[in-house]
Amino acid sequence: MAPRKKADPNNKTVAENRKARYNYAIEDTIECGMVLQGSEVKSMREGGVNIAESYANIENGELWLINSHVPKYEQAKTFNHEERRHRKLLVSKKELSKLWQAVGRQGMTLVPLKIYFNDKGRAKLLLGIAKGKKKQDKRETEKKRDWQRQKSRLLRDRG
Image (tube, rainbow, N blue to C red; front, side, top):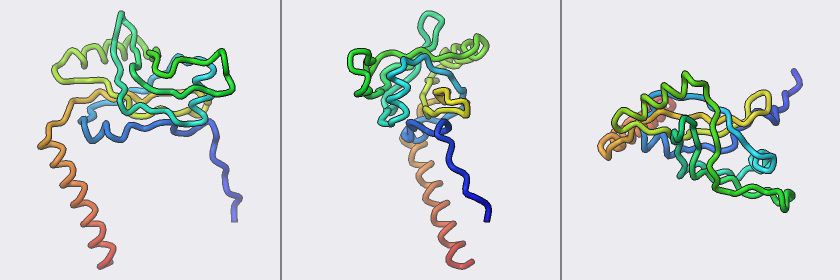
């Protein structure tokens, strides 16, 4: 047998917004870099980050992540960061103009989907351009998901 590969410690998901795909119809996604302080990076590697209530906004020609919670890093003591500060997101001018146009359309919002570390160990944010779902749409997606589960059970039992 071949030796088992160890998981890369740099490439891991830190936080995921699962409710976003339920509450919004994701039309497109963009990978953004993040401007972080050292204590924030160490805290992210430990876990406990929450992006469930957060959103992204364009202010003064810059993209910002608002209301995300990164817990304090205990070993940093006096050089710690604010837990709910606005964090700048790094995108190209072309992508920023694309986001600006999407937000300008009615009902489009910028929803953070996932924070992760890429292969190089850099913190990245997967940002979704989304449109809010109505109650009827949410019920429809639940029906589809339930049907897929039932179908897989039937195939497994008969198969």
